[in-house]
Image 1: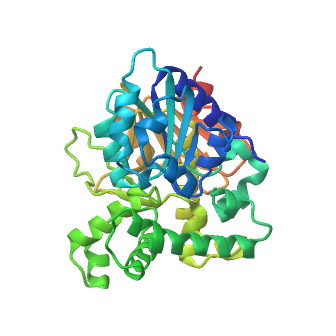
Image 2: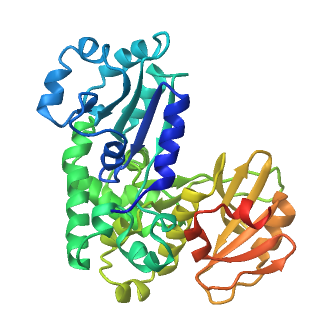
Amino acid sequence: MIRRSSILASLHNALARSRVVVLVGPRQSGKTTLARELLEEDSVNYFDLEDPASLARLDEPMTALRPLKGMVVIDEIQRRPDLFPVLRVLADRRNTPARFLILGSASGNLMRQTSESLAGRMERILIGGFSLAELGSEAEQQLWLRGGLPLSFLAESDVNSITWRKNFIQTLLERDFPQWGVRVAATALQRFWTMVAHYHGQIWNSAEPARALGVSESTTRRYLDLLTDAFMINQLQPYHANLKKRQVKSPKIYVRDSGLLHQLLGIDSMKSLFSHPKVGASWEGFVIEQLLKTEPHDELFYWATHQGAEIDLILRRGDALYGVECKRTDAPRMTPSIRIALDDLNLKHLYVIYPGIQQYSLASQVDVVPLQTISKGVSLVDDLNC
């Protein structure tokens, strides 16, 4: 049992201040396990909408939910979108006798429904797979290879992990997407997702995948948005500064879970990972995903110019911008891109994350930081600049 203390603390805090808390994330990421730590599954206040008994209890939702007090958990709420207006009414009662924790595998409709029906009443918390901060630095290689989805990471062997990830991809495409109203052939989406894996860490160009699949560019953009809604893909948007330089305006694409990336690329061991041409891009995406789980931010971007300058990640916190570069090298050095970014973007600080063990400075505003620092679960900005 891996204790996810940070997410549990966030849930406790959110439930204390908000009438409705929405816990969203990819399927099989541990949402139900977390909810059961807060409320027993056999409690009358627990509804699992994949359970026919719970569905039967909610045939008359207002009658079933109105008398309940304390915390009420509704799991897999995307199966009953008609509950959102009911929750709005119940959340608006005086003295708020009940607080609602609703769980759902991400879909565009779920996000829109919660935003529209529960505006001003809810707080949303995003959960992903396990993080280095939860597992410790000794788990780094296994987490990178297998990804953070719990049943993949905790599998008894690499073979079992590979089998689970293969089934995960099939179930998402063949069962979950159709349940969310997606009317696209699973085989077409899987071919597209595999193409996206080869774009991992690169600037997106929809023309090439569109030609390969024989569809329009707008169709490939829709496919990309579907996978983004499911938290399978991260479309990192470009940062635009008021500069004379020509800046890149297309998103940068990452497969969020490194284990699923490796499954799509046919990588089945650390040996094959280290010899694969995407090893650097894989490590970059892994570092960025881990960093985003521990680093508070208001917005995030990447930055690139057509002259070749690029910064992997830009974090905005308030009015300040912080840069992050991911370098899978033994001893990172100052680069022209770092110098240009410091001058042009007015970065408050820039961090170079690398796989070594020593922390050192390259300049007054540039620190080289080991990846294992992230495993401590502290913010780079707060910890290194306090």
